[in-house]
Amino acid sequence: MANGSRQAAWEFFGAELKRRREDQGLTQVELGTRVFVSGGYIGQFEQAIRKPQLDVAQRIDEVLGTSGFFERTWRKLIDDTRYADYFAAVVELERTATQVCDFEPMVVPGLLQTAEYTRAITQATHPFAADEFIEEKVTARMERAHILEGTARPDYWVILHEAVLRIPVGSPEEMMHQLERLTAVMRKRTVFVQVLPFAAGALAHNGSLRLMEFEDAPPTAYTETSFSGSLLDDPAVVKRARRAYDLMRAAALSPEASLALIESAAEDYRRCTSRT
Image 1 (cartoon, rainbow, N blue to C red):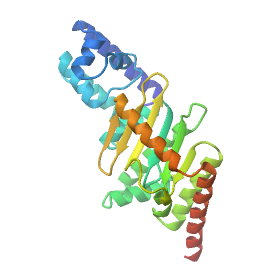
Image 2 (cartoon, rainbow, N blue to C red; image 1 turned 90 degrees about the vertical axis):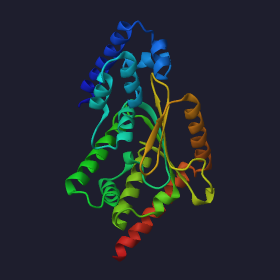
Image 3 (spheres, rainbow, N blue to C red; image 1 turned 90 degrees about the horizontal axis):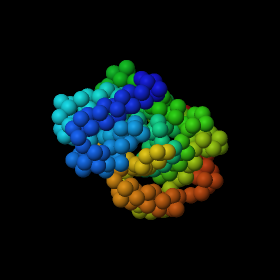
């Protein structure tokens, strides 16, 4: 679904929510209280500024007696079989984010991966999958990277643990190309990358962490482990996540030192390639 038609569909979702809420004689605050979000969030859903999470859409159906209408509409708009269920909503949100901050302790963030790197990760996690499945995942990830193109791209800040540079994914040549991709976007200033070195010691946060900010909606945080992810929008929790991110950013190398370290690691893989 193109971005324009997708937005129109979310506007329809919001208009239906407003109509059916008013048919029940409920204010935004009253509906919000019953589905455990603020009245302001209900207003943002109705204006298509923000998209509800699945459990919120399900509770709206229960309160308004809409027989699963909002859940079905949500699934049609957000569910994408190319992504894990818990990540589909994140993909939708990142399209409208004005700032994205990622921390990755083990792998290069998806938005910066080369096709070869993505393919190697997908094959490692799905060793018995058909080639068509693998290539679908690779294509989906490459398509996501388009948000970093053009003047409307979000400010993108990345913190990588040094382990990301040292753990080979794919062949030495593929790893070299992946690190060269990182240095290229750093030099173009498409993305701001810092490396958190082994010497920094214990981390303020374990696991992947993403923070997203928006023009007309509150910020969100997203955390992920190997088999699940959580999209968080409670202001207090997002504030704690921001603090953890800031602590890791303070402990990370400067952008210049990070670039030098990534280039050095790429050279190490290059030497491995030349010996084979």
